[in-house]
Length: 171
Image 1 (tube, rainbow, N blue to C red):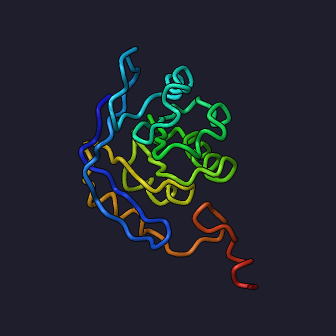
Image 2 (cartoon, rainbow, N blue to C red):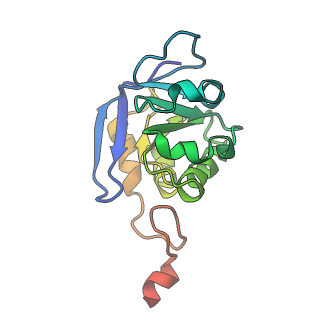
Image 3 (cartoon, rainbow, N blue to C red):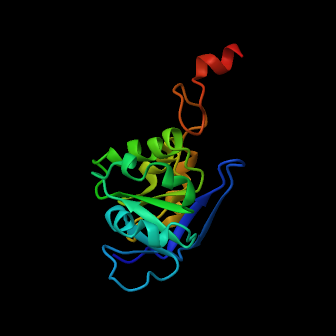
């Protein structure tokens, strides 16, 4: 599967962002050998090797659109990186996975969007709790980062803003 050379990382507290080199390798499946540092394993592989990998902070998990966050459960809190694959921009299941990981399972580490990630999806991904974005290789990473600035006020609540506008105004 490989990796995109660049990653947009967002500091959720300050809103600052930076474009950094991507040091994590996402693999389709691991061998029975030792898992190298900075590897993102498919959820199924993680579950099969959970006991061996649980204490490692240099191994992460990536979700396919049909994976269920419930199968990772509270283990999510122990991981430093979780990636969610968006194979096509028309597949919105990853948005739900992101929200579930943040809101139901209390995941506080880096939540990374991978796959068909580009400027038009960035803001919506942020609203669902994503704070790192592996932009498609055929898209300009600097231009994609501008997508995070498309709007500065929202009617609806989101992971990044728990109260809807009418509650914020009445407060």
